[in-house]
Structure formats: C-alpha cells, structure tokens
Length: 389
Image 1 (cartoon, rainbow, N blue to C red):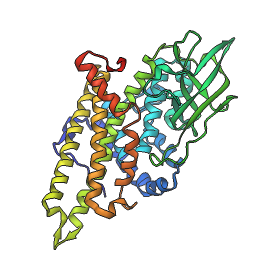
Image 2 (image 1 turned 60 degrees about the vertical axis):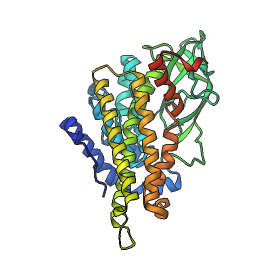
Image 3 (image 1 turned 90 degrees about the vertical axis):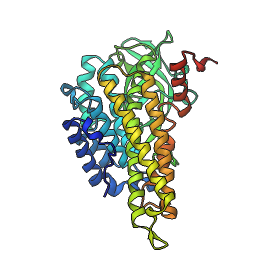
C-alpha cells in the first residue's frame, strides 16, 4: 500500500479543503487505477471506466468556476489532484490535465458566455471528452510556424490542416484547435466530432503513455460555424497561456510519479534480504533512497511556491518552465534509480518503475521540451533570446 511521503511536513502549507480533495483522489487511484493500470499499459488500452471516472470524482476542471460545472478550487488544489493522478499513471493525469488546462481553461478564459454554458458543464462531468490541437507534424517547439488555417465562408469558416501527437483526440467529442485566419493571425476554434472532413486516427505502437489515447487531427475542408471561434484572444498568447496551465499541472504530477517509485523502492529495500540483512541496511542503497527523498522534497517546495504565486497572480511563464523542467527530470532520475534498487524485479509489471520511466520519457518532451524550458529560463535571467540565434 502506498504511503505518502512528506519529509518537511509540507501538509502544514496546504489547506484542509485541498488535503481532503487530494486524499479522495488518492483513495480513488488506489481503488480504480492501481488494480488495472499495469494490464492497461501492457495492452496499450485506454480505460473508458477511468476516463469517465475522472469526471465523477471532479478531476476535470477542479479550478474552473462552479457556475460552469467546475470545482472552483485554487491552483494548489488543482496541483495536488494532478500529483495523485500521476502517482497512478502519467496517462491518467494527461487525460485530466488536457481536459482541464487545454480544453476547459481556454473556453472559460477566451470563450463566449454561450460557449461556456454549452461545453464546460459536459466537459466537467466527463460526458464530453476534449482535446487540444496545436502541435503539427512539422511544427512542435515552433508553434508560430503552423500551417493549419481557415478561410471565411459566410456563417462558417473552412478549416484545413493537420495536428499531431494529440492526447485524447481519437476519443474526443470536441477539440480546441489553433489555426491561422486569412490574415495569418492565430485563432482558437472549437471543432466537434462528426463534422464532415474531420478525422482523428490513433497513433499506434507507442512505448510510452500507453494508457492514454494519442492521435492526429486531420481537417479537410471542415465547415466550422463562426460561433465556434473563441472571441477572447488573437495570437499565440492564447495557446501559450493554456500550455502554462498544463505545464504547471505536469510539475505537480511528476512529483506523484517520483513518490510512487520511491515508495516502492523503500518498501522493497526493507523486505529484500541479501547477505543476511535487508538491502536497506547497505550504504549504497541508503545513498540512493536518501537522495531520492531529498530531490522529491525540493521539487515539492518548488511547485508549492509556484502554485502560491499563481494564486496571487504573480507567477510567470518562466517560473512554471523551471518547475516543469526540474520536476520531470527529477522524477525520471528517481524512476531509473528506484528500478536499480529492485534489480531484475524492477523491470516487471509487479512494480511501477518501468511504466513510470517510459511515461516520463514522453512527459520530459511534451508541453515544451526539456531543452526549450532551459532556454526559457536562460532568456528570463539574461534578457537575451537564444531562440533567434
């Protein structure tokens, strides 16, 4: 049974409401995710039960206003929920963070009142699943180069182009898609499943994030009503603000994955007997475990501080980039080190390390690569933009 690890008693910094939400999600993960997640990963299956269950427990839009079906929580509350979901699996957290930060957030922030009332309540309950279309086959770290575009057609626009590596797209009922208008300005559109010319084939043969569906979004003369255009934003500021929200959730989630790996290694090291004593008594194993809990604790402090700044309106995109980069790298290293503690047993599905490790290889790349986030920090501290070199 997983035991939470709070070496510096950070729970004292979290409100009772947020701790109750976290503990409820933790119990749900134990009951609904843990028993099936290894088999789902082995079979490369997305559990529809989990997908719908996330809506039932309030993991979709916990920080969206209550009037639109959300939980009305603060950013720390959203973060601790993402932490517990990724302790279960990165793919499960991805489903929830995409729905919340990349679909519900832009509709809530940039959408019309009609759009909010139409889409947000159904997204909050999980009746509808959403996806976010920004990355293209030839444009990932450079989203401004996108070629997906639309032209005017009376009461509609005609959308053409393609998006790639889109979480949830094969299952999604709607997608928030970013495309250029006839003036070359980036706009957000809500594309609905069933619109003629829109398809979302799944990407197969993944070695990572095998419990969530990843696909493409292909638009061939798709007629989208103009009422589906998000009126509140023009330009890359729109999708980039969504990515900031998602990156923040990822930084919390990575802590959850690291905690799960550490907890498994700690328990195993106390039970595994070699040379007449538990391997936890050997110096090198204690070194590994001590370094793991130290790095987890540092990451907890970092993302808690970013969350408090977000709630005060003081967090910058660079703050979030630092937390995302640091925490995911930390989690990936701990997954690898904890696997070594278990020796050969660490590669089996009886323990979570290899699954977390493979997942984190994707997490360290998506929502801004590890190197790009380094350059964001570099730009912030020097004032010099390496992206133009």
